[in-house]
Image (cartoon, rainbow, N blue to C red; front, side, top):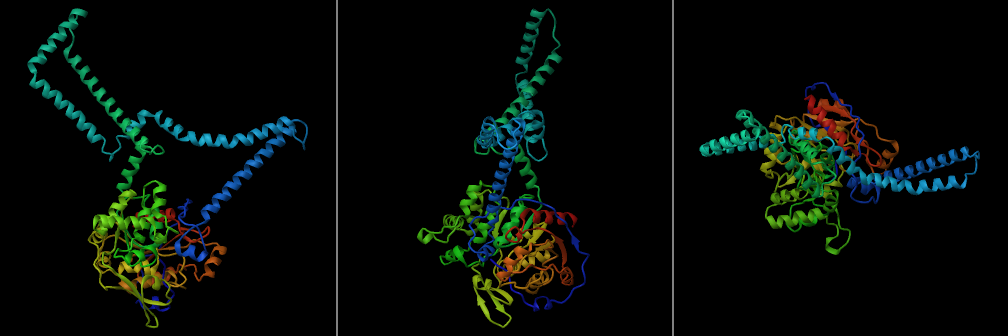
Amino acid sequence: MKEPLAHDSGASEVQPAPAPAPEVEVEVEVEVETAAPHAPETTFLDAHAQGINTQDTHDQDTHDQNTHDQNTHDQNTNAQDINAQNGNGSTSTPAASSAIDSQVVLQPKLEAQVEEARPVIERRSRERKPMWRTIKWLTVGLGIKRWAVLSILGLLLAATGAALSTAYIAVEWSVAITEWVNERTSQLINTEFFGLMLLATGFLLVGIGLRGTLKAVERAYASAGQSNTDFLETALRRRKLNQGERIVAIGGGTGLSTMLRGLKEYSSNITAVVTMADDGGSSGMLREHGILPPGDLRNCIAALAEAEPQMTELFQHRFTGLGPLKGHSVGNLIVAAMCEIKGDYVAAVRETSKVLAIRGSVLPSTLDDVRLGARLKDGTEILGQVNVNKAREIHEAFLIPAEPRALPDVVKAIEEAELIIIGPGSLFTSIIPNLLVPEIAAAIKRAKAPSIYVCNVMTQPFETANYKASDHVAAIIRHIGRGIISHALINNGRVKEDVLDKYRKVGAEYVTPDEAAIEMLGVRPIKANFIDDNNLVRHNPQKLATTIFRVMAKM
């Protein structure tokens, strides 16, 4: 999905509002790897439209080549040292050459052995700290202490009940034990001390049993294909994520899914709300058969997934042949199949989400069969998301029907949210269509949580040609009204000139961060650098998520 085109009247149609509080500038210095692309690059325009980054492969090849060059340099240096020791600065001895050849052959094998041994080393390192790991099991929130205490309490109650119900027998046993000890030691035992010793021994055995149970659980977890992860650390991390902020992210396309990859590292209480106006590609073909478009839902599910990478790759795979399957993605077909099985679209999305074990939830903004339309500045009306995406000088977007019903779960999530994020994504085809659902817009306006609009870093060749950051904000306010956005997150990071030249050739430009104009619209601008520009200019998931949570901490 894409964004809108430049329209000079976009900001002027909104009346200025009183200047808000001073802008906040957040400096983020995070260097991270971005997600690997799912499809090969064809042309630059296609790559820009699909959000595909092929630079990762190139970077990996370059890294491998640099590693090879470094190894060669080290080997040459070793050869020179050997030659110098033999008094010959130009020709190595046969023994030296043999040593170098052995090093060249053995080096890759040694590196491979080290990598294979790494999980074993990490596991043994954990096993050397049994007491510390036992203490970590008592961390607040894991739910271990309560069950351990309950087990011990149950044993005490059982022992007390047995003593009360068999008091006469217990007295006889006590006398018998006392006499037996007296016969062999010629001394009377202290029954109170002896009883306490038995009680302490019982507690010790219970503790050993619980620890053994936890170890058995860890072994079962490792044998289930999770050998590269630590069960305890995973449990602690999951507890932290479950206590994360309640976030609602509204949008669609590749922009929203990119941001979700970063947000899921901070919280699992995420609700992604996506547009149902898509009518292109595989989603468009499925709509012809009465199925709501699953494309944006699929991208968000894959972004929030905790499943194995191979499963996510399969879910995102798009057929390039096989007759009628050409153009369809596996994930779209799975959603369609699940919809037929469950007979309900929302249930189908939830069951599909379980397959990939996602953090959070993904919901459609509406279950109505909506169509996107737009009116251009010259009065022309166009219908269909694909056509709107290619239109220039868009004045207004609209939905057919004009007032679709919002999904109740979406409204509830917005009302309970601690943070509402709008975007990033195509302005007229991904973001505004969600906000045109009346109940969603009304819920955002009355919500207590702040609403942050994440502005795109590059314009789109048609939808938003020549748009500044304030033009994006003004377009949203013109469609929905004031109060829909409280903050605007705009990028102030620099983009390499050679990368910008590629975008200019296809009609895209860097979105100018005009903070003063945004303030005049009654929205508080927040500046930060959260982009990647190795080959394509796009949001860096980790940088963007870090910025959002830092801003939230200051609110």
